[in-house]
Amino acid sequence: MSKSNRSQNISFFERVYEVVRQIPYGRVTSYGAIARYLGTGQSARMVGWALNVCNHAAIPAHRVVNRNGLLTGKHHFGTPLLMQQLLENEGLIIEDDRILNFHERFWDPSKELSSLNKFCHNTKND
DNA sequence: TGGTTGACTAAGT
DNA sequence: CACTTAGCCAACC
Image 1 (cartoon, rainbow, N blue to C red):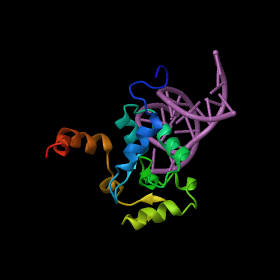
Image 2: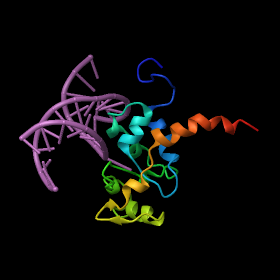
Image 3: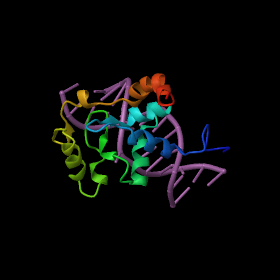
């Protein structure tokens, strides 16, 4: 924990997975939003790359698109249409590789999770 | 040890 | 309004 790790033992990738895993069903977010939530707003590229390395089934990578709502990462799934199908399965409408009503479906972790942090103490409250 | 890459983003032309 | 350029940061070779 001297060079790569700045504050935590887990890697930057691990943090990405944690955030992506918390994306609600039927919602989507952007690489930049995740990167911003992690504190490195300019390293949006690494977010996508993290998903590319992991390929975990538990990580809904299909819910992560670019800021335009374009399925830029669809080519990294099993089939180019898999990502679109997964999103459509969640009630999203995809047209021309773009998510319709993206603004409404957008889920910003730095915003949503930030709000939760203020009230997250309720989890311990019992 | 250092240069290249990349599922991005913002700004410029 | 669409394409081009540059910046960015961490992993990889």
